[in-house]
Image (tube, rainbow, N blue to C red; front, side, top):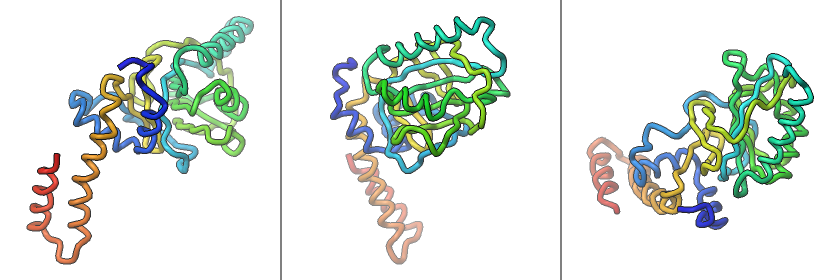
Length: 236
C-alpha cells in the first residue's frame, strides 16, 4: 500500500482505535508482528486526555550532555532538520526522536513550548521520545507528547542526525513509517496491512463483547466463561 493510498479517511478510522487495540488487530492481519514494532520501555504521556494520533514518522537523534564542537554547524543542522520535518514525506507526521546520551538520556530537553509550536506548525501531531520534555503547561495545544521524563533545562541539546532509523523506547522506526500512538505508547503499522486494521479491530471487539457481557452477568462462573469463549471464537 503506497503512501497515497493511506487516505485521510483511513487515518481518521485508525485514530478512533487505541494503541492496544491496534496491536491486537496486528496479531490477526500481520501475526509476525506480534512481538515486534511497538514501544516496550516506560514512557510518560503528558496529555493522556488527547485522542490517539496516527501519522508518518519523522525520525532524528539528538544529544544534550556535551556542547556541539562547532555551534554554527549545530544551528545549520537544526535548520536542515526543520526542513526535513516540513518536507520529508507525507503529512500528518509524528516525530520519533532517539536520545543518544545513554544512561543520561533526557539530561536536556529539545522539546518545550517553542519546539512544540514549531513542529505543530510544520504538520506534526506529536512526538515520541526517549529523551525529555519541559514546559508542560505551555506546549502547543493538541500536540501529543510521550517521553522518558520531564526536565527543566535544555542543556546542550543539538540534533545529531535525521531521517535515519531510530530506536525509541524499544521500537525501531524508519523515516516514513506509519505510526499510531496514545497514552499507552506507540506501534508501527505496516502500510501493506493498514487498511485491514479497522475490520480486524471490529472483529476483536465483537468477540471481546461476548466475554465481557458474560463476566458481568449474574451467576458467572467458569462454565459460563468456557461457553462465552467458545461463542466468541466462532465469530468471524
